[in-house]
Image (cartoon, rainbow, N blue to C red):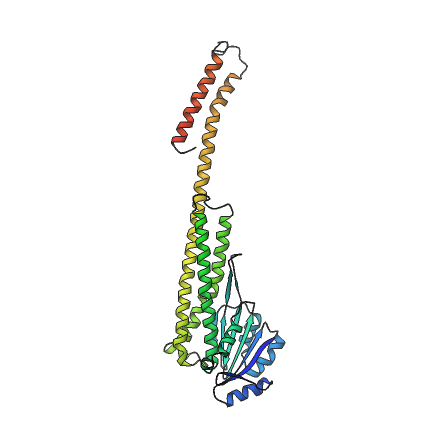
Length: 332
C-alpha cells in the first residue's frame, strides 16, 4: 500500500496532481523538484502502477516485492536500486530483528519500499521536511538521510549488544555461580543474534563505498550528486566502526563460549574425582565386610573376643587416612 506520496519543490512539500505520470512530468519540467512515494509491503498489483510510471527495472521490482535481500546497490538504465536492512534489539529477549528498506532513485523521483516494522522512513521524512535546505538537494538527500539514520541506529544496537554481552561474561566468570546450566544455550543464542546483526551491516560496506567515491567508483553511480560523496563517506566511516564492533562482539562471544565449555569440563573432572574418591573410601569397608561375610568355619580371629572392635577401629583409621590423602590432593 502507498503510505505517503508528495512532491517537493525547493525543499518544501507542495500539492500536486494525483496522477503519478503528471506529477513526474511536472517535477522534471521544473528545477529542484522531485516526487517521493513511500510504500509498505506492496502487492504486485499495487506496485504495477509505480513500475510503469517510473520505468523501474523488472529485476529490481521482483526484489522489492519478495524482500529477503542482502544490502546491495544495483545500477539500471533508468534508476538506481539500493537495499538497506534496519535493525532493532530487544534487551529483554536478547533478540535482534531486522526489516528491509528498498530505495529506487531516478530522474526527479524517489520510491521507497518498506518490509517489516523496523524502518526509519517516517522519522527521516519528518526530519527532512523540517530541513528544506537539505531536502532541496533532491533524491540524493533522501538516500543519504535513510542510510545515515540506518547506520546511526546500528551504532546504538552495537552498544546495547556490548552491554548485554558484558553481563553474560560476568555471569560466566562469576566465582559464585560460574554460569548456570542453560548458560551455554544463552551464549549460543546471543551469538546467533550477533550473526543476524552482522548480516545487516557487513554487506552494506560495498554499496556505501561506491556512493562515497572517489574517482572511478563514483562514476558508476548515476542519479547521485557528486557533491554528496563526503556525506556518504561519513556514513561509511560510521559503518566501518559498527563492523569493527560486530567483529569484536563475535570473537568475544566465541571466546566466552569456549571458556564456559572449558569450565564445565573442569567441573565435570572435579566431580569425577570426588566420585572416585568416595568410591575408593567405600571400597575398604565393603571389602572387609565381604571377607568376613563368607561362610567359612576356619577364619583368622573369628572367635577372638576383641576382633570386632579391632576391625572397626582399623576401618576408621583407614577411612580417615584415605580422607586426608584425597583432601590433600584436592579430590574432596
